[in-house]
Length: 261
View 1 (cartoon, rainbow, N blue to C red):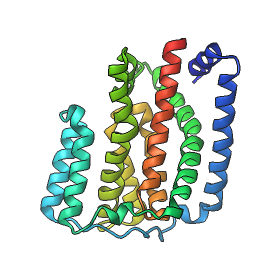
View 2 (view 1 turned 30 degrees about the horizontal axis):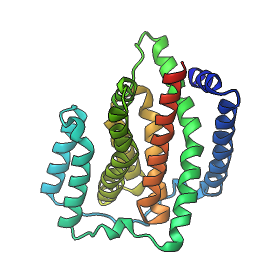
View 3 (view 1 turned 120 degrees about the horizontal axis):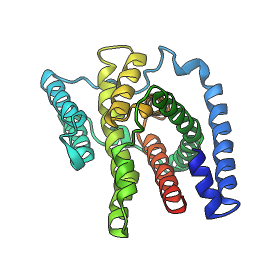
């Protein structure tokens, strides 16, 4: 985080301060929302979204693909596979895409406002938590670790390499991961365990997908928040926007730190 702030200050004297102020204001707004909703966040009444009942073959297919993804065998096809699995299961279990992606004209502004504020609001705390965990792990002799997606961004040199990566990070990954983890894993898990445990399970799998130990807890917290937003809105659109904005901010910060370091 310190390296990133220095990079912003080198790129423009006021740019770093403006970005930090924006993130802090968004964080305060997000904290106020969470405080107002604190009594119901971990309540057993988290059951607005209807459960998704899977058959044994469905669980087998999902388990096989999760193992393949966690082992890194899916490669660049990971997001495509997640989206395909979600769409197939929705079709087999007679769930239309509209079930989780319904959105009214009035709801568009709510999605935009809520999604952007939450994404910007949680970015700074989660990034600081990830940096803290990274430093603690390094104090025990563990070498620094970087997510695979971040490595690709750092290695990209031409617009032809950068633009596809931005498309994956800002469009493909948020849609596919929200479809799968909040649209399939979470509602399916609610048929087996309580909503709170379903939220923890889907969030853990979401965080573990990224295969980065320092980011495990921060991403798990993000996943829990996305589950909660899904429950409150009944649609995946707000979660997709939060996810996309979160990734976009990360990508911007990576490029700023890279080119001005």
